[in-house]
Length: 193
Image: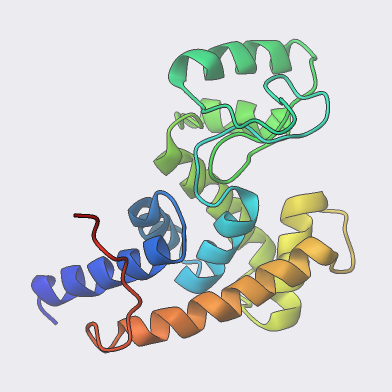
């Protein structure tokens, strides 16, 4: 196919994800493509983590965790967050992929990735998720991989989070299948006047 056809499909995919309420939809499409995670599964994981928003999580006691309030991740406050977490304060999720564990922040930084940047954040998170998936996109694999992403790699059976990621993946898969008809059944947002 031509490059124009690829752009139309990507635009259609972005429209489907944005119509579903995801922020940073274009970056989700790019990160899914870069990591090889099927788009519906990638979108489902990001949906569960943050809705695609570049915010800090609400982990109790976390450095920038304020119950009932979202705090946007900025380069400035992420620098403070990193300093405090690496000094031993409690971490909380960061960015669209809600990267939490201090070792992951250290590893990303050592790789030259900036987790305050939504693109780097989703690439790093989806790459980790892809490792848990191991190329298996079956229901049982997605549920367990999502559980491990959420609860840690030692998890041996799916939790509620893993089950919900699978449910979201099925919804996104159906919506994205409509995107392939070049608009016929693609949900679109109503433009504001």
